[in-house]
Length: 333
Image 1 (cartoon, rainbow, N blue to C red):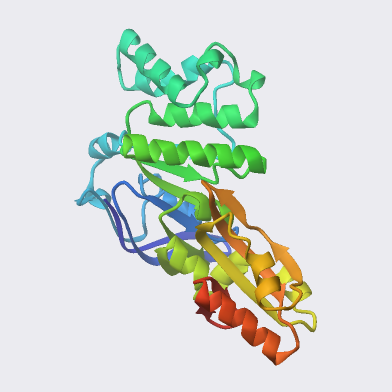
Image 2 (cartoon, rainbow, N blue to C red):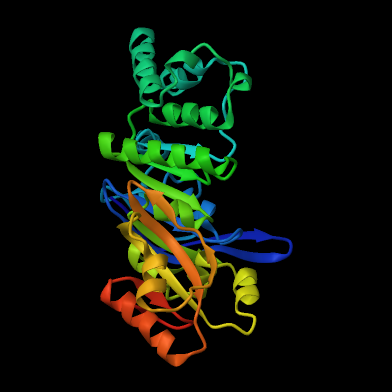
């Protein structure tokens, strides 16, 4: 649906040339939730702004439904941009407009009649569960409610694609899960393709089908979320999964095993079973496992016992139960 072919973006200043996006080739499929993840300054936001040509590439081509947008004129671009909605970290709502008036705004610009745009806005209010807030103003809403309004507004013109640029970064963890759940529901119910820009691996784990890992304007690796999480090939992906400072702290004269959970039953008593069946105490150093729909996602760090026989029993148990693990190098399981 969206295809990047050797796209580069360069900015020029008095200090010289800055390459924000460097020779990126990428394919985003219709109907999927695609994540682009990386640290600050990786070029993620610049890259996503190329999808609707808010940024024009210095080199390369961008295709939307096999149409080369880099060759389109302004009139043609306006038509394609109506097919693309966008939400941001800071919501960007009009403070002097009610929730209802914020949602109908894109429809006003598109010349949709008043009766029809009010009907569409009320449908979207029901979708984002804010029917009782339609006459409220943004200052009267919580951060999560503001983002729900922004999502409804972005969906007003019935776009094929929704771009989310750090849409949950300003929200607390509980609200983040709620917003991600809403986005997943929108993807499944409406068939909207969603592209998510984030620096948080937990966001990618919860909602994305595939992910591209970006650093210094380059896509370092891309693939199914499961494959990237279980077996990261780039240093950036590894640092996103387990930050450097924490790894250095944990590896202080210790050997560590990272056990990765990607959809196992959250009711499986892994640690208890390890302790009993392997006849050894398990020292848990850290975990960020979450229960999503009755399944466990995330990772757990345990200290490897110094006794070779205990280490062997632990790894044998993990192999027998199909659990993924790694110790410094590649992933097993």
